Length: 337
Image (cartoon, rainbow, N blue to C red; front, side):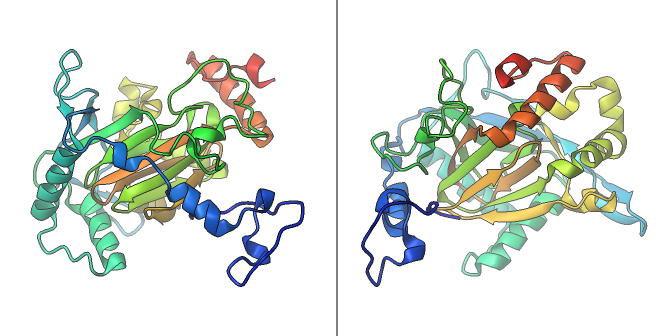
């Protein structure tokens, strides 16, 4: 959830509104830390000027597939056909924030005509049902997602360690001595989504930690599978969900283009956890944890990777795996050692 920090040394004064539990490093209160997080430059994002490249996520019509011991019908796992810079890489169209907001409203009115946002939990469940049971169930579907946008919505003069712009240089970060910028790894990136725009199942590069902050808009649903269940997830992906496609493309798992519902995974013995992220909240993913999710409407999020000493064994394992499979890791074995 939202801002806060670990206990700090040194003396500090307290008041009725600043309890012992509120104290953070340097005597700064949790309330002040939260305010620092909220003090963003989000308002500086151009709302009417076309400035955002968007990728088109196309979903072909999905058909039911029988899974599980009861033979219950679920919509089949699916892969997205992604146009990285819509409509053409050599001539991408730029979208404004206002355009994406309007597109999201139109899609929501069409997909969920009876949507009632006054009941937040019921609305979240309705969106989740639509993504897994309604989307592309009657025909092909297309979604826009302005992902991997260079930059940050935090103020660069904001010294809070919860400012994702500051994380890679924080004490204890193994990325602080990296001599070059890697977008999304040691420099944050922005993600502007619309209803049902997705981030597909994946682990972070080199099994890094990740931190994602939702600045504004609708909630996001996240699913996660811990590292201990990663082999079972991969087996289900390759043998049950996408066997025919993996036979043609053995590296499909790494292309961040495939979605498998939590119900399908559970029917094959992999039970993911679920989180509903609201504006002002952080989501942290752990090394080698597979995760996926989607937006419940127009969203502005920001994410960056984190590396601590706890990550090093995972980095070594990721480097070995990349070498065995002929892939290039973000952090090779020499850097990890």
